[in-house]
Length: 296
Image 1 (spheres, rainbow, N blue to C red):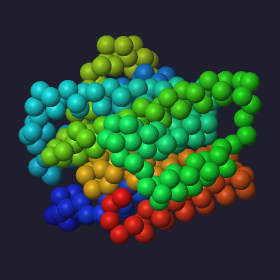
Image 2 (image 1 turned 90 degrees about the vertical axis):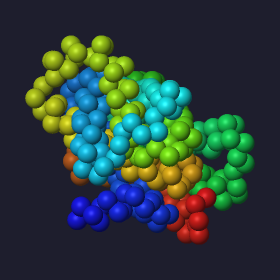
Image 3 (image 1 turned 60 degrees about the horizontal axis):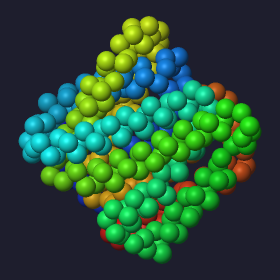
Image 4 (image 1 turned 30 degrees about the vertical axis):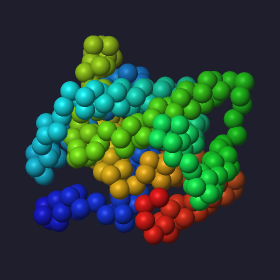
């Protein structure tokens, strides 16, 4: 079993990258759920999440011989730190949105990031989106419009939505940045260093909040860090060695679908027909990705 998993992680083919993206998207779909279950504030949640993620990644690096210092130059460390800071801002803004507007609005606002990815790649890398790329993004955006629950823009939902969209922009920047900075670094290295940067940056501001956390919060945050961060982020970064960021972003458009399904099961929040139709459009876009003969 150890050897099979080791071989899987070493050889990231296109099909394995697609499968890894599905698993990571499923785990990321639980992020808002755990954030809602935890009573702690965003600072404490993000710090705890980064701590457990680093712990899991260090163990993984030890078990599967992933050297964390190999290829780390001063410039590469600066690039990893920049992506780590953006990742931390993404988490803080997302959980802030969850706290003030709920899981649905926060997750759906964050899910706007595929559009930001296409824009960033076009601006930074001069990559012109193909007609198929635009079709996929169009299907995802149309699906997200349908999936979005009804909410009153006159209350805190508006502020929460804006925070969630900012979270999506930051995550798009992380996606594009990881594609550029990961290079010859392995996925565990990238994920571990970025989470370590978050831990170091937030520790001076979060000690008091962490000390006051309820015992159950430690459980939710541990699950958040170990599975929704350590494993999911590692799979995400590994897949970017094969897939372009905008292809990967389409997979994570499934996150609101998974989030709504989990909320339905755990909190009896039944989705409407409109939400289900939006999910069909998003899955259709993913089907187009999987039918591509090579990474797009």
